Image (tube, rainbow, N blue to C red; front, side):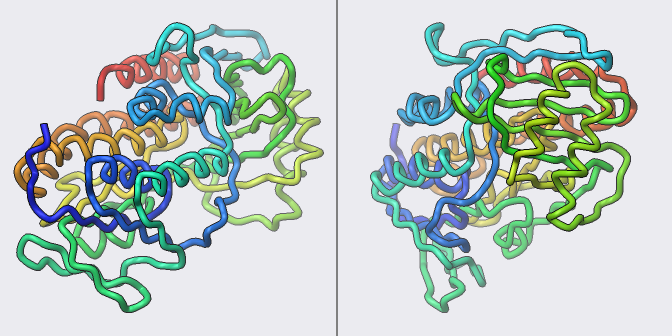
Length: 375
């Protein structure tokens, strides 16, 4: 039931997964939405991600699940492989959007961005590039937002969807520490092996690795390097170093290693997490997605939380008589679920570094089942 009758204007900061989903959901509910994105209009470069069942369920509510699975690669299994290269179990994930549709999908980041960006604009949201937020002031029932070009907006809602290093979070006076967990994660785009019809996770004696299909032709390799300090490597050294790290894995990883040799797209990033322990909002400003809760990549569920946030935010605002009450309900509905996911991802990172893979796999599987519950 749509109960909010005030001014329906919103500024969303960040045109990533959370920001574009929120913009779409709000615009569909009659909000006038402006999205401020610091980056250029081109689809962002990037590797890939997994749209888990909860991601597809939320996207299906927006009518976008089929478009995303068509752009990506639908699958329903996670195969665990032990340190000897032998299968250690296969997890059949629940099909949350119907028995004839996949449980999850791998998708290239640029492809997902194109789907979400096109839908936000189709619904009437205006996306402006080369802009970010410079200052925020609370003005009674409105928020005064000064953008980086000097222009000012007085709106009923400010949504900070500007990532783990969120500027909006700081401008709202909210604090979250960025925690490094002694791991660097590698990713490389490679041709998809014919046998890779689901996610494969490989336990190593020192590190962990895996493969996620993104399309009929493409996949991405990931490797989590354990027990290392944050550091940067020259770009020319990335592919040779990743191939070297993959040497320690037996079995099918040898084929993956050979594919990395031909990859021109290799990245290495620190495993960071962030979690707001208290409120996610102040006045009529709120942060969502990684700005509020950034998990480690082990659960492959950061996108799911971001998409759910955008959808649930619009639903709660529609149910309440004021923006403030809607934001309170939104955070109350989301905080426990998101905290559990972030804390579980951190626990898995610790188990990986302790080489306790036999404990990490069941913990991940139980968290996937928990996430399958309604958001």
